[in-house]
Length: 232
Image 1 (tube, rainbow, N blue to C red):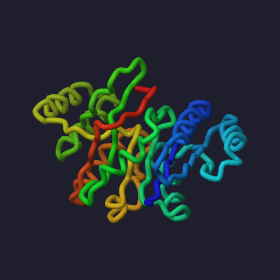
Image 2 (image 1 turned 30 degrees about the horizontal axis):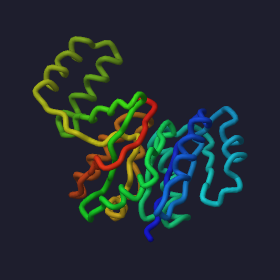
Image 3 (image 1 turned 90 degrees about the vertical axis):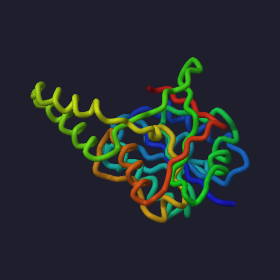
Image 4 (image 1 turned 120 degrees about the horizontal axis):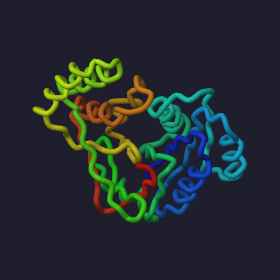
């Protein structure tokens, strides 16, 4: 049976991470282990995580010496999953998610084909609201225009920012996967070892989409299972 390693990035909020991990422990019909990466939390997160799961051989708790952000923090877990645990699939979950169905992981795996690099699912928010699909600018020169707009906003060049905004209105965003739940497949790992590490927070999904496009691979979102995402 192929092995799935779930990577959860914890930062300061270990109680929410408890709920996420406990929902994973209810999964059936799949060979899995869990890695929790405490991403430089300055509170008691690492101590509490160790205390709760130290006797569970399926759970590995790693600690970074500082907050490396989303991509680098997850890369710590991805590297451990591949090098130490021989993972075939790596499922990246936000700490504010919970698996609703006990076959969630097995459903994702069943959707894997050789041209699929990343698999996700339907995402449900609080009160049962379906999270809207995620669209972003992913092609050049749109990505450049967006970057320049952000830079101009940051430095107060509002007229230039408006000009780049006008350019973007002529372009179309593309649907990409949301970063709260991303399963990296064996096809992904044939081309890449981890996420692009040049960001701290935001744009990781865009870069992952571009990774897939460059390798001639696709991303897939299945409607056959769902995950609860308590954040936005």
